[in-house]
Amino acid sequence: MATMADVARSAGVSVATVSHVLNGTRPVLPHTRQAVLDAMDELGYTPNTLARSLVTARTRSIGLAVSAISNPYFTEILQGVEAAALERGYGLLIADPHDDPHHERKVVQLLHERRVDGMIVAPSPDPSELLAYLGRHKVPAVLLDRVVELPADGSLVCDQICAESATPTARLVTHLAGLGHRRIGMVAGLPGLSTTVERLAGYRDGLAASGLPYDEGLVAHGDSESRGAERATAALLALASPPTALVTANNAMTIGTLRALRDHGLSVPGDMALCCFDDFAWADLFSPRLTTIAQPSRDIGAEAVRVLLDRLADPATPARILRLPSTFVHRTSCGCAEQPLTSVKGTPS
Figure 1: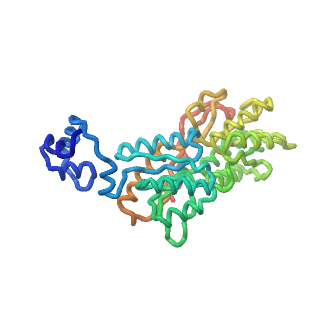
Figure 2: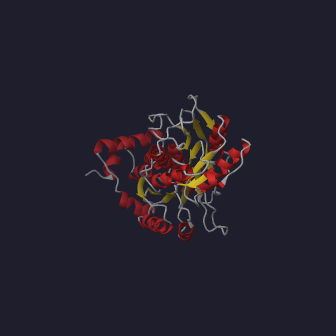
Figure 3: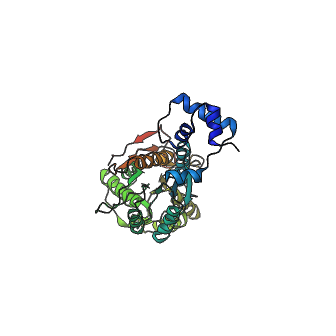
């Protein structure tokens, strides 16, 4: 088995230079770095990650805790995180907190015990245990997708990354109102999530901008999952004066809403116009094709890695909230012809 000394001899450099290339502990000239990498490849040298971590106190691994990994949105975020981490020489450990606050704290503790260098977490509706743990153990972390209020005492400094939610949701509502709909219902997400709060705020903003009153009876919570959306949609359809158009607040709930409409013998958009938050790979394969808000999910994942590594390099950097722009994808479930893509810009915080 090749050793660092073998690599150094083949590349014509010192063992210390090979170490600097492997660990990034000192800048190395590009041609020297390439000579070391070529020698490693030729000799089949594999770094001893465990030994290196004992020296550097770094494992070059990132913990990722997101719920519903089967959800296409989080799957694409995972792909963005994985690609960006691999590009920078980091491995990934993944856990599913199931949007349960107590389980969330347990899986984060498990990742921490595996000595990950930092974590990327999509927080639950009540992240108090999570935030307390991260602050108590000074774990470098980036919060993903959902914005939370950090402890006021400064015990935890971490960045937050998500897509804009309120403005794009308002865009869906004003679009439906512009088509003549006056009773626009919403299948909202799990109460307590910032995404739920922000998309509900966007729904109300869209109604106000369209001169329509807010009717609490036209909002039903689908709890961010398919079965819940089925129940929520059925409740809206049972109203004495049901909506003529619906906005669903994530892709899982879109599936549940479509199933409920089918079970009630209703067609889209003939009987019910539909606009959805979250685009996904097969959204344009439905009949009709779904009008959606597409979040930059892979970019969110990649940006989370970049920001986390920036924080590892400089822990004193002030915390920030980054909001990436979403895209309005105009297809036919709303009841009109498709249009070119247009960006819906968020407001940086």
